[in-house]
Image (cartoon, rainbow, N blue to C red; front, side, top):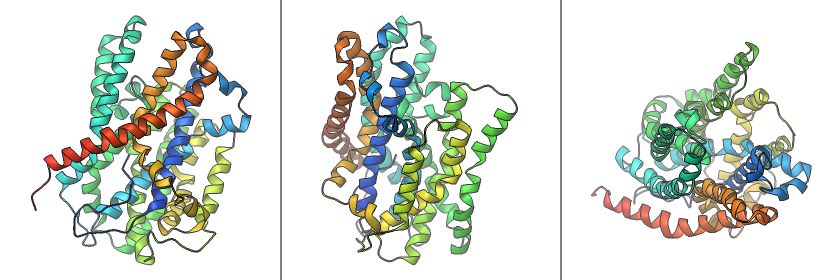
Amino acid sequence: MTRIVSVNCPKKNHHPKQLPALTGIRFFAIFHIFLHHLWAVYTFHSGKNEETKGLFISLENAPEFVMTIMSNGWVSTNLFFMLSGFILAYLYWGENGKFKISKKQFWIQRFARIYPIHLFVLFLLVTLNIGAYVSQGSPVGLLMVSIVATAALIQAWIPPLIPVWSWPTWTISVMVFLYLIMPWLVAKLSKLSVRQQKILLSVIPIVSLIPAAFYGGLVLSGVQWSMTLQLFFSNFPVFWLPYFVAGMLLARVFPMHNQAVGRQSSSLFAWGDVATVILIAIACVPAIELHFMYVLRYGLLMPLYMLIIVDLARGRGLLAKLMTLPGTKSLGDLGFSIFIWQAFVLALAFLSLSIYPQIGPYQVSLAIVMVLTLATLSTHFLEKPLAKRIRARFAEKE
């Protein structure tokens, strides 16, 4: 995931306008994803054996619509890849069609925020879980390979490795791939005229449906569902390329028609608000069949995300006003760390239940407090300081 903060420019001579509403929306989307992971752990693990009896048990009494919204966390996941493409293009894609900084500096800036805190949390996870995995008879070779793949953030390319150590970081694994190819994407997309960019933007939702069509074909041919199959179709990096490219093209085409980027509008209504209401309504639909979910996820909902991002960038509508309320930027700044710490918090939930079974009714509240606390501390005392030192160490002399 990319860092969407106050959108400071990559070079001293460039000062893009701030896009505060995009920072604010990120927190709420990530928090929805975290709640989805709590739901997933409760649904697939709680009470399945004596060790997990009572895990996140307070969700047992949650209203049905709350559980439905938690189960549809994929609605919020999609936003990040398009949002990342939009912000990175806004920051680094120059008007002359070239990168504003060197590829090396771009990669250093991106990876300096990702790898240090990721490796630190992965070390904690391995220390915490390795004993349990070995005692359960997990193949040592698989554990070692998955550690290396997860550490390198390439696990999204190998579906069976995704859930072993840090399931939520598959998103960051995808983003690493997108970071690596973005300079090449800029070079290729810059060769297109404005008209061609608009045409490509309009057909991307159709191209993005290819994974859903492929999955539907497998289902019709009688292929049985498996977790590996679902992990492949949900997490494979190439499948998220259309969302990222769509975000890049939005940033390229949109400013040509609107000079008030980031400026707060007096409008109380925007089409992005309508798109948000539709997404929330879809998140309230229970038991969406997997194939139809892929059709929605990869294609049909993409225009809604476009509307939301454009109006948030403009500062138009009620949602933009809500996402720029005092404190939303600070919450948005925690988004990256919340993603990184999720697996650790979930692992602690299992461990705490084995030590003190009576903790079950309080685990949901404790998990929320813990992930926010860890994210706050690591953002300000680990992530940002380490990234600053790494960038300074490898900064190019001007």
